[in-house]
Length: 291
Image 1 (cartoon, helix red, strand yellow):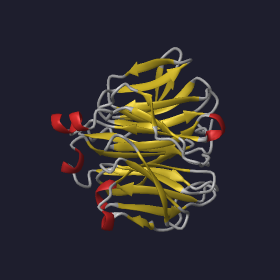
Image 2 (cartoon, rainbow, N blue to C red; image 1 turned 135 degrees about the vertical axis):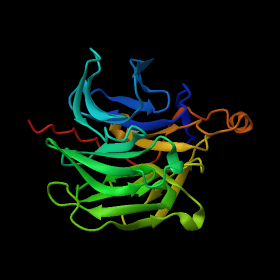
Image 3 (cartoon, helix red, strand yellow; image 1 turned 120 degrees about the vertical axis):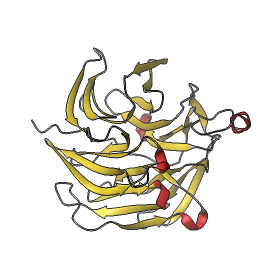
């Protein structure tokens, strides 16, 4: 298996929210701090700029995404660029923003929030689920929400608070709501690792980007480490399966917080990569607006 290649060399200050749109056969990702969404369309780089930070998305149809912004979840038309607010998100907390998010197998959308000051705002964030017209807070006291993804059968959700160095799992009911207390899935603290974004493959293995470690690590459904893919950028942030047969693993990275010396030492930081993981992903489910 070859070394990961650069998929897109535009440098993201904070690349995040990689999403493969299964109808368009197109990867979307965000530069949160750059207030942009990026893609490659028909071989050409394309970007959309926003007035606020944007971080994650789900798809509704060929031309419509649900995007998580600083203050709301909104519907976005990729062609007209029209925006329609779906629901406000912590509008009473202007110092917070959205971070990691993903659609669940039931058609809901999970989104984490955090302080714009990162780990200098401990416990300021939360994880919410939007489902058929209702936004419900699931977990509070979160500093940096990450690793939101779902088992293939939709009965387990995974998430992390990066600063705790633990990926958690929680059982879900048939409607996709948590029905038990979260428990530790993988404790990365002994290895000094910090969980960032994650996705699940067709076999139910979890692939987790580990911030600062320059890798995406794969864990079995039982939480056993299987292997890792190394990337030429230390701040790996969010993986997504896509491409033909969902057999390519894309990963965003970030420049955020790097010194000039570190940027010189890791010149590909902030680029978006593509790797051959010798695994197959799943199509991201559409978000169900319930109307």
